[in-house]
Length: 320
Image 1: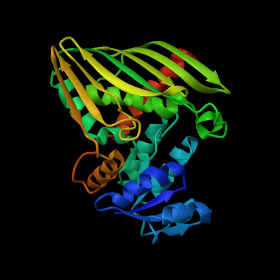
Image 2: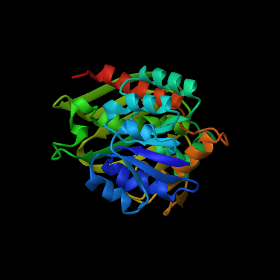
Image 3: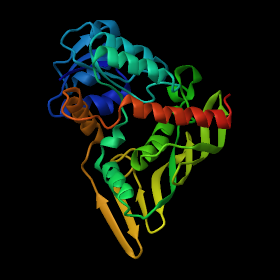
Image 4: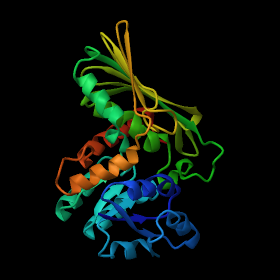
């Protein structure tokens, strides 16, 4: 499958473009950017890359079969729909929308085009999460009673970072709340019944610290999300006869090595995946799903549920 990338974002250059280049059956074919300097960073590992000077020109290229969209958050819906209307499969960075009802437009555009469209929620393709879901839903920790999540980093000094700008869909909930909420939903297969508590601290109309307490049908849930705390992440699933933890759930291989810790009474088991690249696995799974070979692990309907939870936390904690 030939891929085109809309925009020369640093994240695309560092992670997704190399992943497309490395994925079996995939070809990084085209890039839309008007900056030769930015294009050079991609051409360093893909020298035959076709450069288009506009997003529309790339979408008009008949050789492009799939489009990866790493644009600022507020542009995701617009360009995802344009790409679908141009007959392309679409993999768009999270958050794919800034409100759950916007997913209805994407789902309608996907169905009309007959193409695959999905949010780039790469963690569901990592074997640590597949294994966690298998163990939790298989009863390895008994009845699940509580899920606890932390995801934080400190970008307070980066005033030009789009995550610190309200006009581009910035904020911690949009950027990393997707992971904190979506991971629990994926592993457990449950949806929240209620948001019992939400504290949101804002700077410049952007949420920078969020504490959430929620209730799912079978368990309680707590999450801390922040763009003003030292880098930290984990997720723990606590049952009545054991517990399971992922110490590097969201940036596996970058934050720490991917591993799963399972404690059942006096027995402690650790599984590790030191060489797995979940971005490559995401591209390969996307291509198989686009070819009709398997169902995609993160369809738009799943992503809509995560965004609905984000919306509920904003409602409970207060918007700026």
